[in-house]
Structure formats: structure tokens, C-alpha cells
Length: 279
Image 1 (cartoon, rainbow, N blue to C red):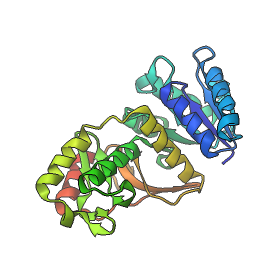
Image 2 (image 1 turned 180 degrees about the horizontal axis):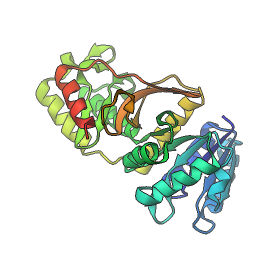
Image 3 (image 1 turned 90 degrees about the vertical axis):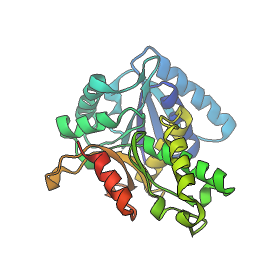
Image 4 (image 1 turned 180 degrees about the vertical axis):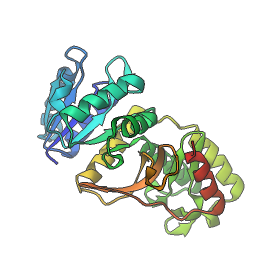
């Protein structure tokens, strides 16, 4: 991937820029924030860290949203001293990005940006395959860690999807979940699963570092560096005529590719997901 532009040099935006630079996820990273020289200062800090940590990614800062033009991926993060882009301000930003970076894939990295994705598709006609939210992957990772702790296993051994609309309408795919290849439903009783679900719901919204890690995983997938399925906010497909809302769903990403890959769900889980997605 040639270039990633990050809109917002707040805590999340700065962490993500540093993480992408360390992982060499793109040839260059442009950190953009209209507040003074915040982005330039963070970009300089990250560049100086490169000499110590051993990476050579080009990181620059800017105050102009138009400088996102030419980026392969634009990440909507958080503004310095203000917080994440959301609401009407977020919609105005998406409108500006649609003009300046019409071919870029847009990743909304904040936990409160689900409705921003929905409005971007519904009001600005941004294709649903060109804008997603990465925050649900952070929650799914936390869920895998909690389950691993409960079973004295490694999070890498846990396969578990957390979909729907967190935290109140999330659906945990227990029926398809596994630990080291063993079916979760054989290892964890129903009362324990209910207790774990309450703990997982309480973890929303995730913190900045988890959000940055989730966004970097999504960007790696978009660049073709990973074939892993990630959990992302995806705008509804209105082609069927059903009116539904943006929800967290498992997707397989790649260059010019977005494919929803729902796991097998039990009857109760299927009904819960349908209810979560209904307007």
C-alpha cells in the first residue's frame, strides 16, 4: 500500500500512525489535524522513534484535509482536544473526503462512528463497499481474551465472533465458537456464557490502543497482507428492500474487496441478530 491518511491527531490517531509506521503497513503515512501544529509534532516524534525502533516509513503532518487526496486508505480517527469525528461534523468531513479522495477506502476507527458510516452511505451515496468501521474488531479481540482467561487458554486458540450493535444489541456466536479446535458449547456451560457475555458488553467502548490495533489489522487486510476475517461495522445492503441498520459483521477484506461472511448461527442467535439490525 502506498499511502494512508489519518484524519485526526488525537490519542487514537497518533497511536495508529505510530503502529502503522512500525509495521510498515504503508510506504507513507500522513497525519492530518486542523488544530495548529499537532499533527506535525506527532509526525516528527514518530519519525524520530523510527531511528530507535528500526522502521523507515515516511510520516508527515498537515492541517489540510485536502492533503488526503491520493491516499489509498483514509482513516477517520479523533481530533486533538475534541474527540472522535461524529455527528454532523463527521458527515461534513466525509463530504469533503468524497471530493478530495474519491477513490480512497474509508475506515472509521472510533467506537461512536457507526451512525457516521450509515449517514455516509445513506446521505452522501458513498458505496457501502468503500466505508467500514474497525472498532468492533477491538471488542471481538477483548472477548477472545476474556474467554481464554476463563478456560486457561491462549487468545490465539479462541475463534469467536461478536456481531450486531454493541453493547446493548451485540450477538456472540457461541454456536460456531471454538477453543483449540474444540466446540465452545462443549467447554462452557450456558450460565458461564451468560456471565461472559455481560463482561464482554461492559468492555464497550474499547480504549485507544485496542482501537488503533483493530484499525491497523483492517488496513493490513485491505493491503492484501492478511486473509483473516475481521469484525467491522458495515452499512446495510438495501438492494433487498429491507430497512436495516449498520451493524458489526464478519468481513473478508482485500484490495477492492469487501465480503460479509456470517458464521453459522443458532436459531436464537439468528433472531437476536435480525432484531439488532432492524430499524
